[in-house]
Each structure stands twice: as structure tokens, then as C-alpha cells.
Image (cartoon, rainbow, N blue to C red; front, side, top):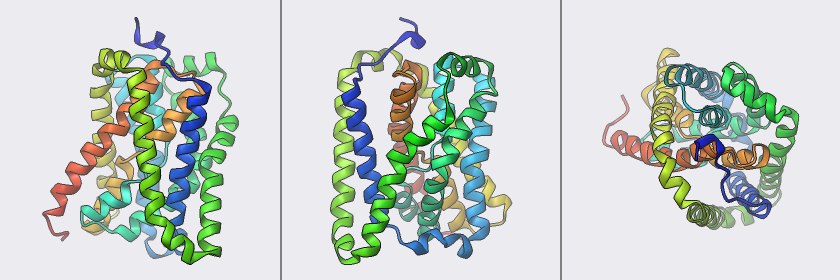
Length: 298
């Protein structure tokens, strides 16, 4: 069966559970944040600028250049644009700490990019996907309304983030006790959900993963390298460069997966891109962090 014709085994109830799990992850992340993290832009203005430019401009632009070169199937290209438009992944702070990068900067970038993504993700995706003829045609067929996607992201990311921040502000002692258990619980539940979803679609995944693995490898490498180069161009110190590189190269592909099923009916190539991104960026980010952990930032 052609890749673009695949419709993965994913029901409305599966989508509801995925969105609920993503909300739990975002709620757990919010318990870890403080208002000071959002004003980190004052403490690290150039570094925050490098991270935001890398996240919302450089990575989508590099993705456009990449799809024009490798010319993947339209649904694969659509998935690549969608992942590129998502905010940084929730493990970027841990990986930055392991890499001996600026963890405080990483937390601030995650906070700022997550809030910005409430509006930037749908608008960025609609803009960049429209620049490539094959994905522009898909967008026209689906008649995607960016504001509908914006409302969905507000529910998946914005509401849990606001609730978590409010709880952390009003009940700091409870939030302090709940942070670690909530983080581990949400990540374990998410991992179990992904395993179950893979099991239900194992044959499709094994048959077609070769079509997405190389594209994800290249896109992820461009994200990591592009983030580092953007930070280098702005003359940031090495620990800041590492934080920016990881923030740009680690994407919230779980959000991308939810949007694929919510707006594109589980379009095969796009779903496989988002799913494989969720696996690969942990491998590449982990290996890079281990490499940097053995080298003192200078």
C-alpha cells in the first residue's frame, strides 16, 4: 500500500487519551516552572533570541530546504513541517543538564517557547507547509484552519500549563512534593501509550519506517546543528550554545502526533514522522549530551 494511503489504527478514544496524556505532561512541566523562568529573557536576552529564532524560524526554514532536496512523499513532508513547528520537547532541560549546558537558560527557553507555541505552532506550520507545492496541495484538500489548530493547542498545552502554574503559585509546598512523582507518572503513562499505539500499528511501522528514518535523522541533525550555529553566531558562551542546540533539536513530537490524528485523520507518513521523531530525538539528544558531559564548557 502506498505510504500516503495508510490510515493508522487510531480511534477517537485513542486521540482523547493521547491529548489527556499530553496535558498531564504539560501540567507536570508547569509544576517545575516559576514566574522567574518566564522573565529569564531579561537574564539571557541574546540566548533566548537565539533559541526562539532557531526554534520558530531556522528549523522550519531548514526543513523547507531539506524537503526540496530529498523530495519525500507529501505526507512525510507534511509531518516534517508539523514537527518543525512544534515547541521544544519536555526532556530538553534534563539533557541540557547532562550535557553541562546552561540549565537555567534551557528552562527559560522551554517556558517561553511553550507559551509562544500556543500561537506560533499553527501559524508557523500553515506558513511553511504552504511554501512547498506537495504539502500546499494537502493543506488545500484538508482545508486546514490555523485557528482551529490554535484552539486545540490551547486546550492541549495552554490549559494544563495555566493550571500547573496557578497551582505552583498558590500551593508551592504541594507543588514541590508533586513535581517529581507527576513528571515520572506522566512520562511512564506516555511511554505505555506509545508502546500500545505501536503494537496496534506494528506491521505498518515495520514496513514503512525506512521511508521516514533518514528524513528524521537529517532534520534532527539540522535542528541540533542549526541551534548550535545560531548561538555561536550570536557569540554565546559554550554552555549557552549547548542549551540552545538541545532546545532546537528536541521537539515536542507528541504534540505533533496528536495534531496529525486530530486534523489529518492519522495520515500515514505524517504520523510515522512524528512517532519516529519521538524515539530518535531521545537517542540523538542523549548521545550528544553524553558526549558533551565528558567535555568542560570553555
